[in-house]
Image (cartoon, rainbow, N blue to C red):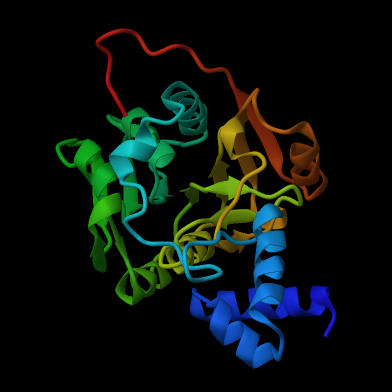
Length: 262
């Protein structure tokens, strides 16, 4: 079997199960474990999966807590979130995805006459006391490390809803414009967020270009608007523009001392 064929099969199994192991792949594909490791290393280098000890694609759900991720590039995330909030009209029904940039978005939606649907408990914390926002909290299995709800119940609830716009987070964007996420259990929720919305807005600061992730969420053709900053890769942005995506850039301003933290 050619290496490209093996790698395609590895990705197919990963998308189906969310996790693959070197030993199982070697046995199923009738090759050595070292051959599988080379395939996995190549796929990892291309950003098509993320390797962890003992496997090819599994990512521990508690690998990096929400609070730690929120400390990464906070000014860029807030600038992207502020620019994205300008796309919302009063009266809109908005789905806000799980993520640290989308949590910053919630701060910029506060005080607006909106309906906000979310599985992010971080977003709930920002908006729960806001009398202007009608807040719809999705149920599911609690992912404690990332302050979110995931699983079949979350996906089914989204399947019953229709929103004007969704704001999607990502762990990284591949050079071909594929939007990735590093946590297998979140990917079906993100896909359901996209399916429930008339308009899809992707929030991705420059550090997400190029990016890595466990599984693809959607291609560039599914994204109506990409909000990023000056650090984003121009070649990747051109892929989105060729797919019909509107690309908006935000300029990050340093967070004032004593200001709100992510």
